[in-house]
Length: 226
Image: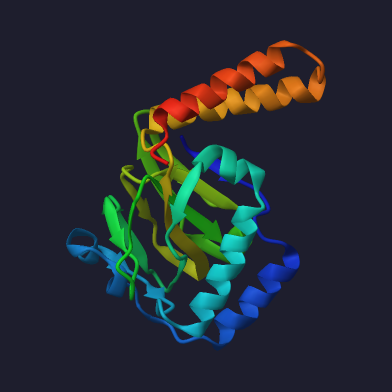
């Protein structure tokens, strides 16, 4: 499932983030790359343990915790602390697949990367190129969203970032371990939940709403890891 989520961050939060980015130190993005992806990664990142990354990461995690569409789609169990990258001057990231397991730096904790997320801090008019290209069984999908919007997609997908030829592309990227690891099952639950919400909105007293809600929770109970 490839799902855009609009307005994760507010205009005020984006402005605060831009001020933080302007004063932050950026380092070689290969510091967080695996062996395979390090060969094709060419960008800059905020250091994982920096104050800027911590503040912005907390902002994102708080926003996601209040976003019903994210919770419905991801069914999050754990979220990797958000990382931040910048592409400019022809920088790009070649085709790769994300590591299945990520160690949370400075802790004994690991998460399984069921879903990948990219949250954009710069809008499409601020840079040329820089599309996130996600490949699935239906082909390649070009993603270039407004600032504050996020794309959610299966972490096993092949993907790359095209060279940025004008301006700078700044984004956050991170991974989610879902309560339901299988993407097909998670997609079915998402479709069912959205249908239930639509039924409740249009026919609030319809008896099928209770039945369908029961089906949803019984499937979640059967499939969830937690």
